[in-house]
Length: 274
Image 1 (cartoon, rainbow, N blue to C red):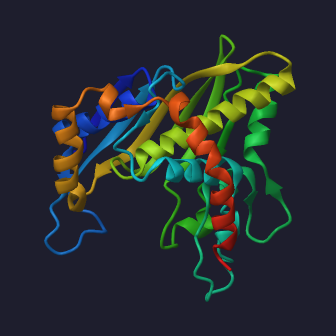
Image 2 (image 1 turned 30 degrees about the vertical axis):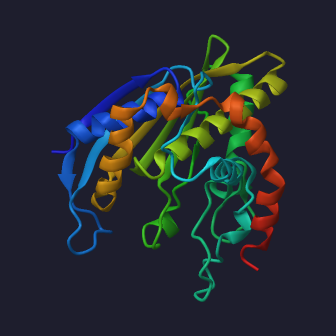
């Protein structure tokens, strides 16, 4: 039976770290569709991560995949759509570009090749500005007519928001989430989106809305067996050898580095897909 695990943390880095420890200790062993011969089983669980104050420091964990510039690039991909031009034409069998981007699905959800396009995030903001207690402020990514048969269907499934005591609370659901190699960057970028939504609702409602708690729900939260040696020798070793402060960055201390990387990121991305 796949266990249901729950973790609470004050900030992003702390909650993500705790989720990996909980998964490693209590997750079940499962094979995956991506295993190569000889790979050990993955650690897997259904995971619920509650982050009480997503903007509290330290926000960034040093054991995230990639570096600070990679993190900024991913945030720009999710919140600004800098890689939407890399999505393939589903009606062109020779087009080998990406199946989707989260930004495109959230901000430009299109049904087949019809003329109807929905900016789901803007619709959410309008609903919340009108009725902060609405239960209908959500955005989805799954396209039944595409994702049941495509090679790489969307992992992020939905975003749901509600305002309580002038704070925007967000629930995010993933059907599948690589806990070690993807989840931190997913969460960090989606908290950036949460900030954008709070700012937009503040503007539309003329009421200051702050960022509230973030809840990350993954049906399958896993560490691949092929990554287990690295997890043991890097992540678990750091738990033993370094303090929490030594395992993390304060976002306010590295924000200038990430901001300064933006022009080069845009230049690089513009060349992609040509």
